[in-house]
Length: 133
Image (cartoon, rainbow, N blue to C red; front, side, top):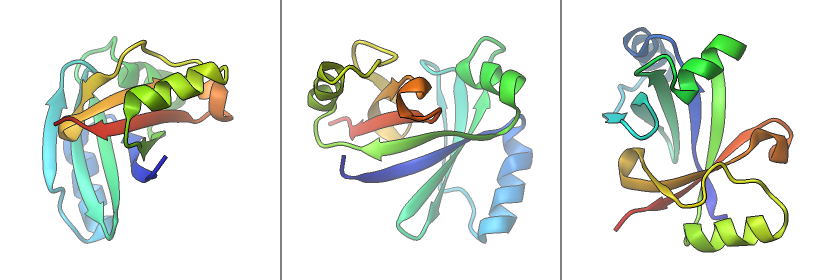
């Protein structure tokens, strides 16, 4: 894995969270996007070399809605940049890690994404990201 790509934070109301995080970080989000495949609306903040992604559910059955219902708002996932997502998925599966999908899916910011089950990383949902080209 190359680096931490971003931290994902589940929020109940994206507009309210954007205002709070804009004030906290001193910068406005540089990108807003809806990701139908994941059932979320997102806002990204650039903080130095790092990114923070706010995620709001677009429907009650989305993973974010379920996460908030169970745990409340907060850190949802840590995303790591990888040079070859399929190769990384194969490597992890061969080592016994459970992936939440068999193939990479389209994600925010024109990325291919795949998630590892949180039980595989001490309760942390891990996202693998590779730019789509």
